[in-house]
Amino acid sequence: MPIWNPWHGCKKISPGCAHCYVYRRDESIGKDASIVTKTNDYDLPLKKNRQGEYKMTPDDGVVFACMTSDFFLDEADEWRDGIWDIIRERSDLEFFIITKRIHRFMDCIPADWGDGWDNVTICSTCENQDRADYRLPILLEAPIKHRNIISEPMLGELDIEKYLETGLIENVTCGGESGPSARPLDFRWIREVRRQCVRTGVSFTFKQTGAVFIKDGKTYHIDRSQQLLQAQKSGYSYIPSMGMANRIAYTLPDRRDLFQRLARSGFRSRFHLTKTDKKYIIEKGVETIRRHAEDFVDKKLAPENPVNDGKQTPMKGHPVFIAQHATACCCRGCLEKWHNIPSGKILNNDERRYIVDVLMDWINRETKQ
Image 1: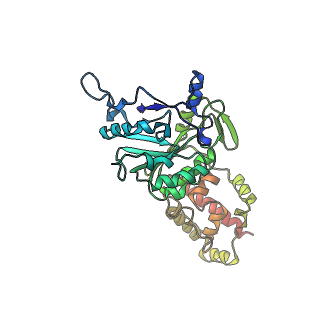
Image 2: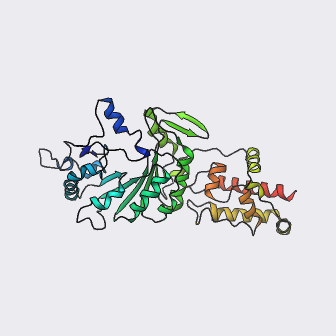
Image 3: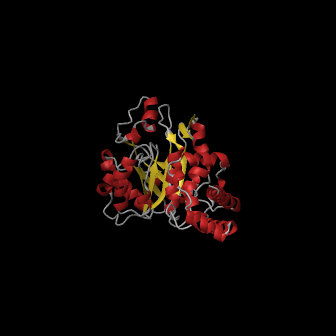
């Protein structure tokens, strides 16, 4: 992963900047990171070896630009045209630009930008909902061929599904914050954005846990050397149709504990079978109802990305529908939240059988009342 820093230094503009690693690193060597300077690597992609060949080649991978600054920083306006010239000349390389200043994008592009360059990906950051709602509409409206989103450090819950539904975002990356003053990352936030990506068919990358990581209500302090590794081991990164969710380890809940938790939920506990539902079960027979449940699970829950996930189960019309809402087996999001079954995977036979057993267990309890 080549890194190209044509200038160094930046100005803090939003909450995600509070504990900037560039500021922290520069301070450790007595340097002021708020001072923006042109670097000796300004023309790095054009440098050649003794044979007259470019030192930087496509085989080296995507070139990440301005990782110790911001590409659209106003202090760098006088240097940026030269950088566009280099990117234009090295059309054989792919360039990745991360920015907190997407609002300056239209003022900073070259005259021949058109609807975007094939070899440039623009990635807007959004550390919280406020920044997402400000920056992402600008990202989507701008003439860009390749768009990404990154929330790192991720500072709270994010609802970005409406932006992902446009089909214009290629990848979302989320991660925690490192350093001695790191703010916590709650795994619930990661799982929810990942579910949004699954539902919209967008790739998702869980980059790192950060130094302070909350999972299942417990806070963990994770050494810097383990933050990337632990995120990778979780298996929560996702690429559509690649079967990556099969790597996620999980444990199905204890049935007794599950029903106790469902009983404590005001929403789940309000579902009950009517006299008409119970009569239907008697007329059809329990085995027929079970076959109906199996069919609903196979068609509406089992796919990697079910059609209209979150809205596919009616609130009435069949005893199994009622049971699905009562037991949180109505969509893949609820299956993950209540039953630990990860979204983004095709349900295997054991998982399908488990869901049907839970549904029938609830139906049997209801018919005895």
